[in-house]
Image (cartoon, rainbow over the protein chains, first blue to last red):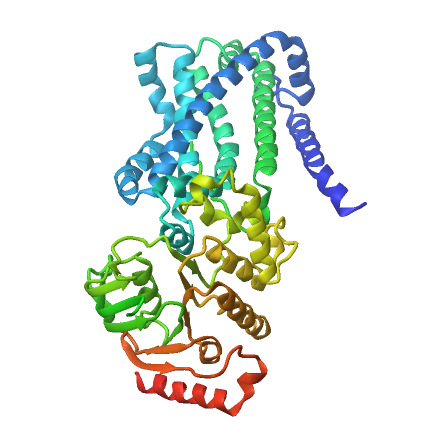
Length: 261
Length: 261
């Protein structure tokens, strides 16, 4: 087999192997299905509850995308600010790191007090979890512009706005898109956690209800849905990244991947 | 009267981490005539690049005066082109758009970009032809070798017809053959554009090949310890670098650099 086709098959083979391992562990140790369902039982639950899974999955997707969207806009603005101004960096960065270090799950009860249970705390959590990688990556891109390039621009009399539009933003795009892939997966983590703790809809809520009914196969089916949505969104942003910033793959710009829950 | 005049210039800077004051340039006196090709040579770290930044208006002297065309330099000049050891081309732009960057910033080109689109493309094409890059306008920077990127960088530095071209070791990272070829290219560009060129280098043969006048700087804090007129006939060719006259001049200069410690 050619090396290329091996590479293409590898993720599928690995996933199949993982599912086999999952099944094997259950069979060998005789695990009951209210502890850990088999892959087949999970699939059956997926088929049986497809309608609520779809509705709630879409609700979670919407929540995640709204939180993520806010995170992208605010992250980009803060990143440009922190990356292009030394003063803004000095002033804001400690605060941003502090925010990022707070366990977001601990904030959910506060969001509930402020906004009530429901979608809003989930959006907030998705936002809180996903904005930092965007800020850090965009700021890094701005802060690492070659000093000679800045001198060329300044010697031409370029304004701060020229530098941001003509150099800063185009240069930050590969960093930005790399951060989107991390941010979207973190946004899912955020919204699902919030739905489990304080939601009244969404896939997290399905898991909570199914768990309290000992319907473990449904919990796993819900997990599969979350995983699938995560992979789907990741793939979309990966595709966009490659379309938008093909140049960076050749120009040897390395991107930082920073995240945290 | 001198076109560029540095009178008794000091430049001190403060190291942020230690707070110590370092004198990079001390008591520098340089007079450069309009259209002259000047080279500044000296041991590394002697403040050669600092001198360029002072002339470009990217730095203000701590003491003394920098005057260009009779006016004291108080802000970045806008009428200079700069080129460095790194080509610093924008990796997301093709060669044409890279060369056109100054036209998007410097007036009067900036406000006439739309009307002059065709004309500007022709100008780029002509400059590229002069440096031997005909037909490369649509290529991306990574598709070009180091020497070709430096040629493109020279075009970018000249496209807005600056009266001063500041070159900070532009050929230092190239192999000998490419470097010597580019000496010829630069000499040719200068004979057809007739701007004032200041070339920083620590390659003495390069300085003698290209310059009308060579200023030798001392070790830090840098000042001019010797100024030599190079009266070798032009255009100078690579064969002429093996002439006894040429070699004598190089030897003489080498001797002075040794003394300046």
